[in-house]
Length: 45
Image (cartoon, rainbow, N blue to C red):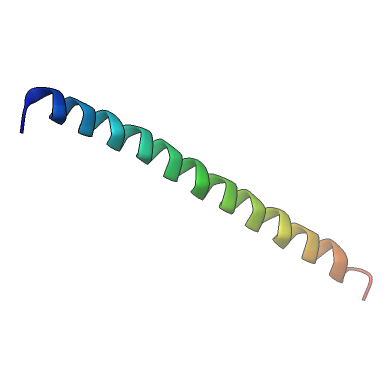
């Protein structure tokens, strides 16, 4: 492969990694919010 193709591949992998990290962070935050809401909701029972 040429040097430019390798540079593009490395840059694309970095962008993809940041995107996947962002997705996992958002999923984690949603899971924490749902967990806290279930704890608050169960106090009335």
